[in-house]
Amino acid sequence: MLRQAQHDSLSLACYFCVILFFLAPHAFAQTTLQYTDHTYRAGIKSVECYNTAKQGSFPIISLRSNEQLQLAFDDLDGRSRSYYYSLEHCDASWNSSRLSPAEYLQSFMEDRIIDYSYSSGTVQKYIHYEVKFPNQNIIPKLAGNYLLKVYEDADQNKLIITRRVYIASSAVGIAASFVPSNNVARRLNNQKINFEASYTGLNVQNPYNDIKVLVMQNGRAETSILNTRPTFLRGSQLIYNDFNINDFAGGNEFRHFDTRTLKLNSERIARIFKDTANTVLLLGDESRNQNAYLFQYDINGSYYVINQDGRDARTDADYVYVFFNFTPSATLPKGDIYLTGRFNNYELTNANKLQYDATRNRYTMQALLKQGVYDYQYVWVDAASGKASSEPLEGSYFETENDYQLLVYYRPPGSRWEELVGYKVINTGRR
Image 1 (cartoon, rainbow, N blue to C red):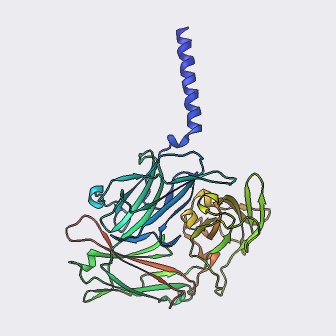
Image 2 (cartoon, rainbow, N blue to C red; image 1 turned 120 degrees about the vertical axis):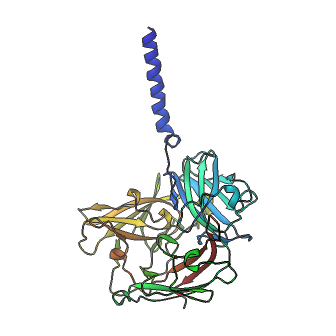
Image 3 (cartoon, one colour; image 1 turned 180 degrees about the vertical axis):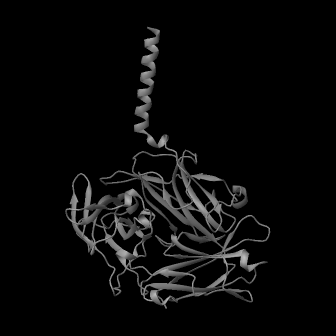
């Protein structure tokens, strides 16, 4: 009897363990920290991180200024949780600077997110969280790259979000311009960035080693170029204009759709279905790799959460299942098509991969997105080479309007870290 009772108790314990595992898988999940923009849980949606001066802007502020960054996200789980956030100082290549928080923060090491509210009048229930910083609890005292980490129960092993943010000083001045590529074969497709960085006032002992400049297109880390050596020096100016550097594929204007209202179809929407869930069927997309450039307004891959039918999009904008379908204009070699934009961190994951429908010769996928305005593009990943590029499906043109962010990093003499000492953005549409 005793042995049977022990067996029954063990079986019951195992049963409850299984039940708990399926009811709360997040409690058992192990997450590996990624020094990139990444969302670690499927139920976390609509993550925004920007300078409060403008929604959707590049997440950079000036050191010791009144500027703030805003982080906002939704938890579709439906019950409030105890979320915390912290900052980690990183170098120009987004490796940890391995500093103690006391060395780069003049405040607490972490802070709890206490500003949250429940959705109102929506089909999809969620809780909206947001926080602005620097604030009285989190104050960076060094310029540089910072990895913003959000996690549950003050336990950094329970990560839910990481975001790259930037705190800059203005010790270095930058002058930049863009020109056609020096590569004759790519002159109609590429945009080359030439620039100068003036470091007057900085104690630079070796300009070839102490200063690095990162050039990003539309804030996208995966296409950025890190300049570790200038072409030549002119007094206290670093000149970067070598024929073969900072040559970017111009790409094409992003595709877009608008779900600010679910009462009528906007430009790119074919049908709207409202039942137990909101569903939007977009018009079909085709390849835009044409001979000529065609202007189309976009927001350079970004997105805005907006609800025209409500008063506060943070809590009354609903979630919508958006159906995408893409028809290739020609037979493609073996490979995969992905849908990317800032809304999914440009990640090439299974969740963002289109499925091929052989009966209709088209690729399809769906995404659960909050009401708003979204930019997106299609990326082709060749099976043979593994190379990812939007050019085979979207085209690439010198005339494309893009933002380029230039960030200057400096390692002070004898220090163990790199500081962000200069920032400039240029737009190819303004000459």
